[in-house]
Length: 159
Image 1 (spheres, rainbow, N blue to C red):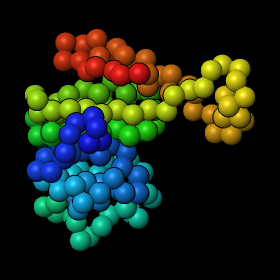
Image 2: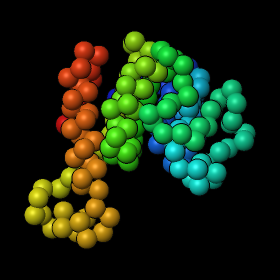
Image 3: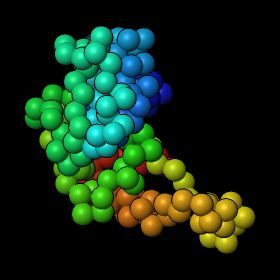
Image 4: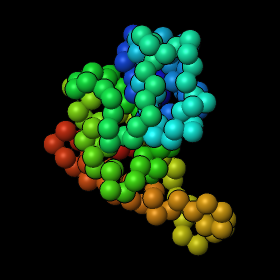
């Protein structure tokens, strides 16, 4: 994160698809973010994620999808999707990206990190396809992200 957006000290950060909240805690406690939104739509995960010692002024925990971020317009300095955009339901990806734009300050940054699919036919790809294959979700997320980046308030993708 620091390589992509610089230090988060004193900044407001949204951790979308926060899972267990490890990154949220790191940014709030160790990196000195002013505020962190820990957002995940999986209630069973969020139940274990909430840290009562951080909740309130420092961290807001929200059990909701990326398409319904509980963040005021132009409030976030940084919005993070770390290996999570492809988990957003296909019908909500566009809305999630619009929500990101809405919540982000004009000079803010979005960091979207997604797994890269191995080449078709490679041993690694065949192994993935035998286990939990997310290739369809990854392709949809990449396509929607590329369309979004072509929009007027688009983003730069570094491959």
